[in-house]
Length: 92
Image (cartoon, rainbow, N blue to C red; front, side):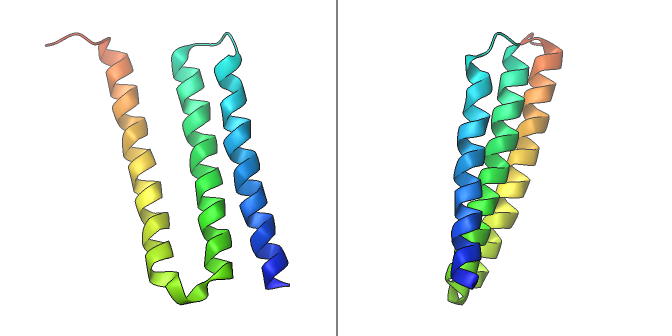
């Protein structure tokens, strides 16, 4: 049962990865494309890491560290992108 749940989480993660790629082909703004890509990529990666956590629980410390690092990195990157978009690339 745990194996099935693990494969399900990994499969959901891969679906999120591809789902985040499709808005890149649309005609919306660059920031919308980056936002949807980063959110889907974060959710997909976290789902895959959670699936690996179920599959190999002996490596729980490294996988939890990976989850925390992923959440912090993508949050900070989102704030940096938002700041860069509001300044318009001008040097003050």
